[in-house]
Length: 107
Image (cartoon, rainbow, N blue to C red):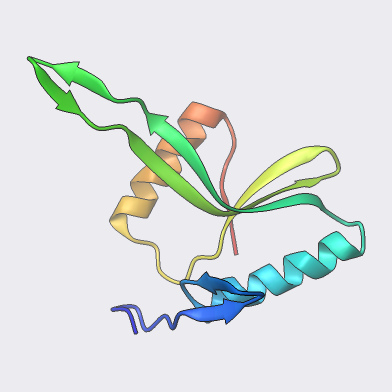
């Protein structure tokens, strides 16, 4: 169990970080089967800041990995199954909005 009481859960051979995330995956699968959403993807990486070099030192890129991404009505939705908002997530959420011009849907 993690420090936020999240329990790893396996569905369809996929290990999710929490039961909440696994439950949301099941809901999204049903929505896709019903045709309400399409192109469901899991663990989609987004680059928030590219790697760079400063004074000869390499600085690593900053990434955000979305729990889910799917198309709804021709618009791509990036979604995160949040149980607890960490300071790191809050910062990455702002960086994502700035870089991609879209908010992360939190469920």
